[in-house]
Length: 349
Image (cartoon, rainbow, N blue to C red; front, side):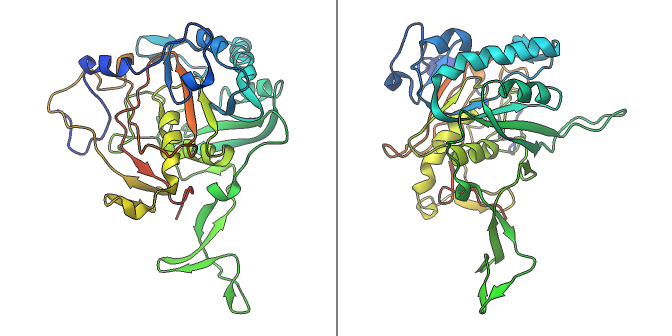
């Protein structure tokens, strides 16, 4: 029986056909308006050649790490560094024609594959930075340091790229409140205290991987936090831009891209919205239906048909970042709780 506070998204296998009918299958060349904002069910390497050329503004890639890992019956086995570099080149060369000339790219990896990914990306793109984020969760080690970090490589096609620094500034409490002519210098006085919006660094320690009591949590074994993805999307895409995720997994990129469309909606319009100062989010919770009986989707070995998500507030025309997804398994857009962004900004206290 599922605990009342367990917010993990799951559902019965017999629910899957309803969602499968919403997925797009691509076997021939398709125009942009056919795939924009859709989840494509298929093999990335088979689907990509049929997609339009030069359409994506932002590419977010969370490929299989060089680890032996089971993904609901499918899997990836750890291989040599040379083979993993060849795999990385294969998907880069596949996706490169789909990107706009000023597109940005983010690639997730662990400490073991990070050097390989960085050096391989450098063959095709201009490396801009390497982000390291603290996962918090991780297995303990008796003969090594616990692995609690992951990397995200940031690269661009040229030096002319989109980066909205104000959208991702970090809100910090002011320790030394300097003033000029009696007025705050680069900080503001609020009822909750004194704060400054500072430029973010490439080390992120304000993020947690989803866990069982978080409404965004799924049973996918390598799900990325929506807050992490929101930072990438808000910084490196414009409203109306197109976000491409070729390894969609649990579909968090699609959910986050759609949620960013709600940025212009005032928080007061949703009576269930409450600020979350610790996490840096404003949540509008809508828990999934409670099931008194165990489901086939519980646990980490979740069937592919149980990859679930939820569509959030429908964006106004031309005011959203529209995800285009094609995946090696399944991904749905109907079970995640809604989330609101505060003025198109992530507010961290």
